[in-house]
Amino acid sequence: MHNNDIQQNAAMDMRVSVRERAILLWQMTLLDDQIKRDALYQRFYAHGSAFLKARAQLLDTDLTPQELEVIDRLNYEAATRTSELKSFAEKLMTSNHSSTAMLNTALSDQIIVANLLDKLIEMQRTQNEHYREQSSQAQTQLFGRVLIYMVIIVVAGFVFAGYVIFTSAKQRRLLEAANTELQHVATHDHLTGLPNRVYLTHQIERVMSSVKRKNSVAAVLFIDLDNFKPVNDQHGHEMGDRCLTLLAARIKDNVRGSDMAGRLGGDEFVVVLSELDKADQAEIVAQKLINKLSETVWIDDKELHLSASIGISLITRDTRSAEAALTAADKAMYIAKETGKNQLCVFDAQ
Image 1 (tube, rainbow, N blue to C red):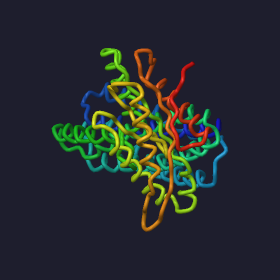
Image 2 (image 1 turned 30 degrees about the horizontal axis):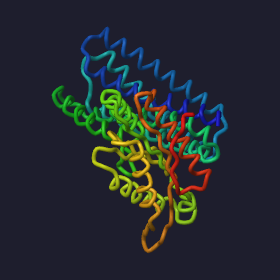
Image 3 (image 1 turned 135 degrees about the horizontal axis):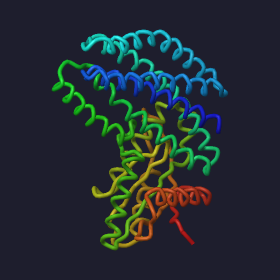
Image 4 (image 1 turned 60 degrees about the horizontal axis):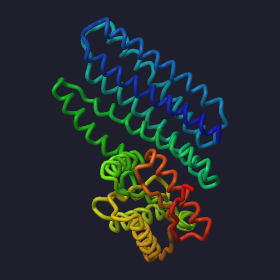
């Protein structure tokens, strides 16, 4: 698992270097001040060195055949396009005028390299999810890191909005549109459309503030589907994704509009219940969700039977942080699984 962490860190460093070089190249085209442009030029080459250093770290680890295949393609694409990228950067240092076509080509080349890195990072993310199934404690630590890396990858996407630059006014419009789309992508799960861990964490923090201000109570429900792995094994991942989408809709449809349902990843979901009249209302909602998720799922005339285990963490004035509330609900969920599945458990801090 340590080896996989090193691989992910190295791949992410390479991805950040690609992003930064693209941004710096774009910024150089906007500057007429030679001194400022020279400063960007030095940072441009520094990120190139960081890319090579991270690649060396990655190659020094134990890689799967699939990862080696992607890295071979990455090495080829990077080697093929680096000379043109450097040539364009050097031309910017000797001329006050830049070619939009050359800039678009350079940025497009970086997108090709970035896409290969995204594929490599996704392979490593899948390996981490496998480790999560084998060890709940290791998964708790790893999952947070994977989500952080995924957010970094998504945030890096804004650079692609700047690939067509004609006038400064048009550049601003393109960036505004990209930022709006980025905000949605960075805070929502790509499969179900539900809020992701980032958005859920912010929601829990808002609920915590309301609880302290009003001296009320709220709750976090950590939902893990029982027996979901056989669905993927027997019917394939496409069927599994369709099943997750349907169950996500069930969860969302069975909570209040003031509450928030989201997906952490895999077969894990979270519901944030705000402003409860009584603490035991959280158990009522959890039992309702257990009943709904145990109902038969029909996909293409195939009958699927699943259930869910739910851990409940109450949010009070004493709750330390959003992560503490999620961790407590996660622990309660594992107790529910260990004691028979298809049931709920309320976290007891004693």
